[in-house]
Image (tube, rainbow, N blue to C red):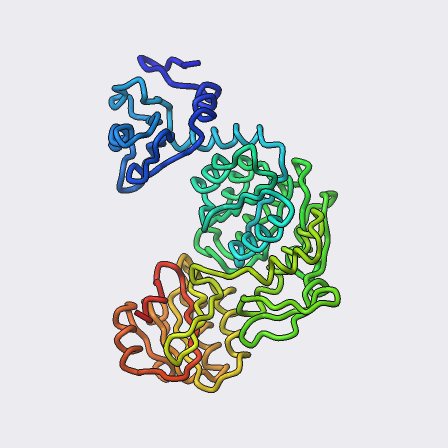
Length: 430
């Protein structure tokens, strides 16, 4: 049905859903059109998707969803009040037609690794769909849901947030049946307004689950999370320390599960709780123990997350997917425990910390000094603002740091790369 608004006709969600069912592939980039897809003409700070709608149709899109009436010049244009709102509403509408478990995952650190570990474990029993990459925001979550077909038996939705109210909003779109918070740390301090703001924002997921008959997975070894689960909510409790007993982390994490030794391809003991939840969720949904172990041993991190690689004579630990004060501290401490005499730290700024930035960057510099690291490279203006003239080398930009790194000609070194995505600290290598 079309709705009148002034002189214009706007399509309602029922009619849009019928079209979506006939053309279930969604595209938001006119350069990546596939034949028969639905193009949603989203707007950004520097672009207006309405301007590319006609091009999307010429490239093979079946329809283009637009919100500029002046561009409505074809019966293959679908006019709506707001393209973004329609994308989100369509995803919510589609979710109501999915009668499957939906597991939502959020947290300050480890969301993506945890999601992928859970995906690989659950795939041993179910046809499982999970958020691709880090498409975990107000656009990525709807796209994940809309890419979920009737063949899918289990959906995992990663949710990120940098301000209060965002997790609740995403939960209203995805309507999860089960939820999990990895941890609450110092991420997006600027947007959340401090650690207490982060705690309030992330636990919106718990409150949503409690109000909508959802089930909360709760790690009893997390002192913060055990204090914020709503009273009377449905909780599946487990202990990460009981499920995953770390044996070795040189260089990869090896642990004992039941009476078996499990060898992973993950770096850092901070991945222990991520692994433990994948085991807990697998057990809860009836995945056989041997299948759980097979999935965990086969999993290989990518995209600069807890990766170990060889570059000539040097061993590189690429933990540069992103960074905040909590994850930076954990990564440095894990690196400190590793065997090796010639260690090099390459650390990039931690972004989105606002008024907390100076203190948090100073604490990281102090930590590296306290632990006795001799070769430490800091990249970014936040580190420069609080630099210690007697400890470390400081560079404004990764290009300057690369020249220094190249000239040092490190050999047989153990090198950790850690920083926020905006710094692209891994570029120091090439």
